[in-house]
Image 1 (cartoon, rainbow, N blue to C red):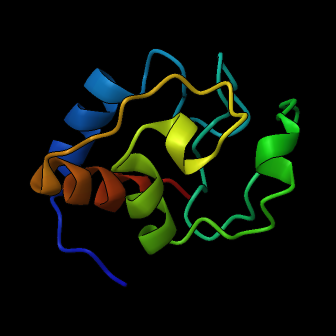
Image 2: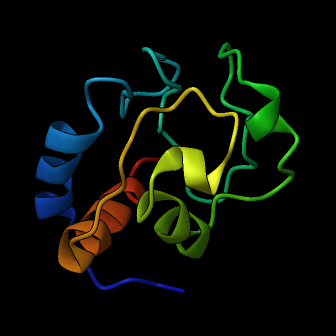
Length: 106
């Protein structure tokens, strides 16, 4: 589902919520994998990043709906066994803005 967010505001949300562990640049992994091209990518497939089995065995595609579901709750609830330490983003506007921004990373 296409979400009507503001990509500029989403870039700010990314900086405050995601940038410590993730990069928006292609091929630049940090503690977490690069989020370049995340929308439409199969889970657990960013190049040169070692994922836990919890994510690689999920066999799902990162659609905006899947990202919305995943990021709106604690990561360990969404995907038990993950190393991701994130409590979830509970502001619907910020979440839509973030997803719109992530959709521009290609």
